[in-house]
Image (cartoon, rainbow, N blue to C red; front, side):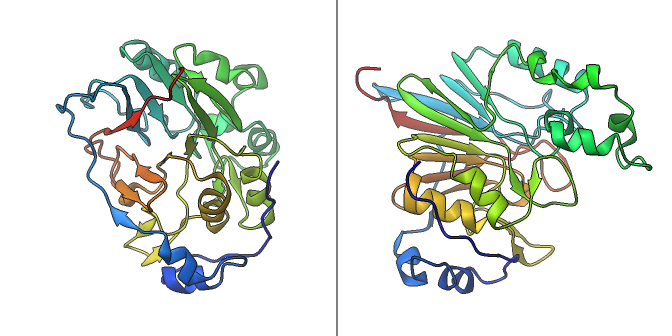
Length: 289
């Protein structure tokens, strides 16, 4: 299992420094010593270096895939929110789109909009006296209990891992509570337990939401909304080469801390316009893969 991190509560923050200074087990100065910088993604038309694997990263497409110009690559990563509500019809349409793409591997996780993929959420939803999500809450269990099986054209990860081209890839859909959508958990203990499932030695981590301080700024609220438990898990224990996420549409872009490259691959803007281009990252292919 590796290091089990301490538990603490965490609010949304306006000051990253204030948050990092409050992190137990590592001072804010030590956190900031891990360089935090913006990074330019690989141009879509750039040739791939010999011995490298090209990853094409997208997230938050929200059933708006038709306008997206997909670049060349070896592995597609989708970090969740590929539908509006997780309706079976939406999942089928997304699966058809995946089937039209030429990538050798296509790896997908769910996000908070994939309501039907969160079985506990659905069990609670259909018991409610009012319909918060009418089109979803009216579904019968037989219509959603095996919704993951509709994804026949990809590798679906949910608190699980796969090895492709020698890279260990782990995917998890959870994120801090966000207005009662799918895969929402309270900050602190509940999320920490999920992050402690991530094994050490993972090369590529896919989560739906960002870690604190990396591509998580929401200008309208003047707040950082990333997960501090995830930040500590990534920087202190797992230290993957690549961390791909979305969820915060305003955070689209690439950053690095000297060890990990962080990609917020949200295709849709805050106004749900699918105008952000897929992000391309090249990584040296592990030997003996």
